[in-house]
Image (cartoon, rainbow, N blue to C red; front, side, top):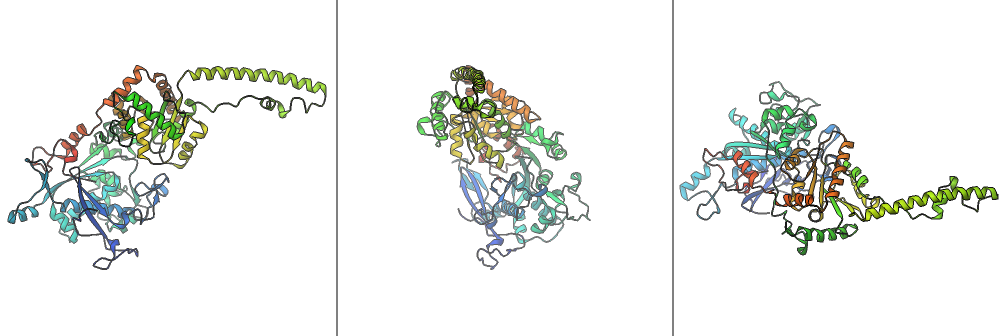
Length: 597
C-alpha cells in the first residue's frame, strides 16, 4: 500500500475479542487498530482503510441477501435483519476512516500556471498558520454502509456543543473540520442495512438518543429531538438507510425516473420510506459510464483484430459473434440473431421472465427420426406389429392400426420437414446468459445448453472479459428488470451496438425516453412481462439487419453516455459558486477535490 498518512485509529474501546493477530506498541494487538493509506491516481487522492475485519482472507465470509455467494455487504437474516457478525463494526471503521481522512489529508489546489495539483502551504509562519486552518468538506455517501459517517459526525458535534468530553480521535477530527456538507446517494433503496438495535448499541457504544434516527420506532418527524426517556427494547431494530436519509443535507439517486418512483406512494418502489423521501425532495442524476473502458474500438479485452467502431460494426460484430459462439458451444453462424443477458441472476433483474420467454423464442430440441419402434410405441401397451399376435385376426387388426398410425406419423414428419425448411430460411436464434445469483436461477441458467443445444448457453460466474465479449458479439441485450435504479448495462450494451431491450422503469425509462434501445411496458404480473418480452424479441428478430435495426444500433453507439453532462450536475450541487470554492474544480467530477466513499 502507499504511504501512511495518519497514525493508527483506535476502534472503539480497544477490545480485541481474543482475536489478536499481532502486537502494537500498547500491547493490545492490531485488532483494535485501523490504518489509513493514501495514493493518487487520475488526479484523485484515494484513501484505503486497513483493518483485520475488512480483510476477506481473515474473516469468515457470509452469504448475501439471497444466500447466493460469499459477500460482506448485502447479507440478510431471519425477518430481514442483518446477522453478519461485526458487520456494523466494519462500516463503523470505514466511517472513522472517512472522518479522519477528511481532517488530516493535505488540502490541495490547482496551479493556474502548470495545471497540476499542489499542496497548500508556504514556509515558516505562513505554513504553520495554514496547517491550523480548518477546512470545509463535502461528504458524498453512497448507500447504507456509509450512514455511520453521519451518525458519528452528529454525535461528535452534539457532544462538543454540550461541552461533553471528547475522545482524542474526536478532538483531532473536529480540529481539522470547518463547514461540513453531506450528500447521500441511493443506489438501490431495497437494501437498507437493518440490524438489531441492541447489537449495534453494544458494538458501537451508542446511546439510545444518538441512535434515534436509526430506529424506525422513533417517528421520523422527531428524529432530531428524541424523548429523553428513550430506551432500546429487545425487539428494536435499526435501519441505516433511514438514518442516512434523515440526516443528510441532500439526497440523490442515480436516475431522474427512479427518484420519482421511490418518492411515490407505491411501496413496491419506496420500500416504506416514501414519506421521508418526499420530505427530503430526493433528486435524480443519471449515472454515466467510463467511455474509455467501454469502447469497442479500443477495448483491450477484445481480440485486436475484432475491435470496431460505428463504421466497422458489421465486420467487428460478425467476427466477435463467431468467436463467442465457438467459445460457448453455440452453432457458429454470424447470421444468427444473438440475444445476451449480463447481470445478477435475481427476480428483480427479470431473469425468471427471461427464462420463460426463452422457451417460446428459442428452437426446441430436434425431434428424433421416426422409426418402426417409434410407431410401435404408439400402440396401446407397446404391442409389436407381428411377433406378439396370437392369431391371424389379431395380427390383421394390429397391422391395420399400424398402417393408420404410420400415415399419421408421416404427415407429422412431412409437416416438420416443411417447418424446418421454412425455419432454415430464417436466421438461427441464440441466447447467452452471464451472471451469478439465486441458486435456483443459476441451476436454470446452467441447464440452458442442455435444453437448447447449440442455441443457448449459460455461464454462472463473474467474468469482466466475457461480459465485454458478449456485448461486442450481441445483436440485442435483454434488460427485463422489474425495477432498475439506473441500468448501466443498458448503456454499455448500446455503446457496443447491442440494442438493449428493456422495461420502462427507473433509469431504463430515462434511456428509452432519450431514444436509446427498445422499451417494453413495466407490468405488475410475471405472465404479462413474459408476453411483452416475447413480443419484443420476436419483433427484434423480424427487424434484424433491417434499416430499423441499423438505426437503433447507430443511435446507441453515437449517444453520449459519458460523465461530462452528469458531472456538471453534481458539481452544481456540490460547489457554491457564490462563495470561495471549497473545491478547485475543472470540467469533470473526477477533478473535484472531494472525498467520495
